[in-house]
Amino acid sequence: MSQSLLEQLHDEIIAARERVYAVREATPLERVDIGCGAEVWVKREDIPPIHAYKWRGAYNKMATLTREARGRGVVCASAGNHAQGVAIAAQQLDCQAKIFMPEPTPLMKRQAVALHGGSHVTVELIGDTYDEASDAAKAYAKANDAAFVHPYDDLATMGGQGTIAVEAIEAGVGDFDAAYLQIGGGGMAAAVGAWLKKAMPNIRIIGVEGEGQASMKAAIEHGGPVELEELDIFCDGTAVRRAGELTYELCKEVVDEFITVSNDEVCNAIRLFWEARRRIVEPAGAMGLAGMLQQRGQLKGKRVLGVMCGANMDFAQLAVIAAEAGIGGQMRKHIRFEIGEKPGTMLSLIDNALAGCNIVDFQYGKTNENTGAPVIGFDAPPEVIEQVHQHCTKAGIPYKDITDHEDVDFRIVNYDPKLFKHPLIIRYQFPERPGALHEFLQRIQGLANLCYFNYLYTGERIGRALVGLEFENEADRHAMLERLNSDPKLRHSYRELSPEVLGRML
Image (tube, rainbow, N blue to C red; front, side, top):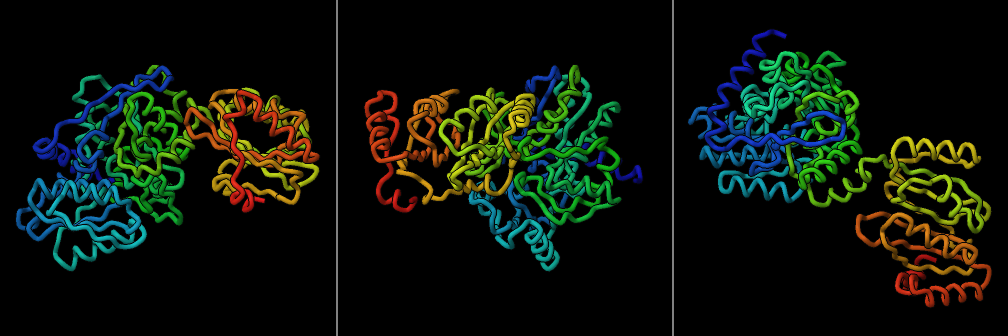
């Protein structure tokens, strides 16, 4: 790479400092404890009005255009944050912006664009993906002699984004040993990394990408930008199928190491930041923090920088994040066990194989007279998970890790109602505390056999399960109902299904 490209970027960052602060103040740098003995600082780019850093690059790029160029209008393509940055810049610079967004873009993000841009923006929904929207935007810009504002592969855009590093240095906390910077197209990582290295030559820059969207890592390995065949969009703010040409050259020079993080690791980082700051950032926003957590064993005694680069997320995504984050940073696993189909075997499995595990998911349906195959999801530290494996192996219990299998993700609970003997199907609720589910199984031991169980932890104080019990005869079934009604702890905790629902189930 010619040195001149890096020098140009440095010059763009210097020039951007005067422009961006004409409309916005610097964001704070705050310390976060990740429990590894490191001094971790995060740049709060989730705080600005658009709740993302993208306004910096969009405004700087548009401010470099001549008045005549802005008068012809500007065009961009975005699935969210960059669109809001262009919208707020159009309002500040009093020009018109046409913003192309994919049709599946959440309503919240479309409304945010309208809120920040008002009459200065027009939104066009086109295509199912960012790439389709981007192609349409570029074609429109060419046909109408309008300026295309690229979200990352432009030196002026990167110059604005580089002001993040300027502020981090001017915060006065001292030199950083390492910076974990998320990579989508690579603009922020290139600009922030370049300025940090200019000021702190010994700093180590780690580029962090999602496992299913590592376009920059692919470019480095290939020797140039290459298009990914498949793209995971869970971290939608960094979901870029092909790295930029300029950003590739710069990241190749500036980034010392490229790592990938899983969606589960990102969710855990979101959880940690929520616990530390009571703020929920979007998946892409937490990717740098996820990289730190992955390498926390290497960070003791070091001063480390990260960027919480956005907090724009559809509310419905919170449920997925909470489910994947685990409890207290533990790992979440789903295992299918093979046990004997007889009373007491389920309780024995939980008592012995899963001792020390926090059960968060329980999927079981009777499909065989002799054997059962319950799927149990649990949170536990790695050493406890290893103990589960060791116990099952020693006890001769067949098992298989099916974490992330489709039937688990979509909660496909197979069962054969023809095998249920004198069934009693109830909706059961219990206090969501360790041991409560175990106590229920103890209470029915010797009185009934489980033929169906469907439970998922929701984070509420009350846990709810759909439970199927079977009996040798109707007298035993009736005796169980009497026991449920007479036991103070059970009487108000269960409800039989309505005949209509029961009819569909059986």
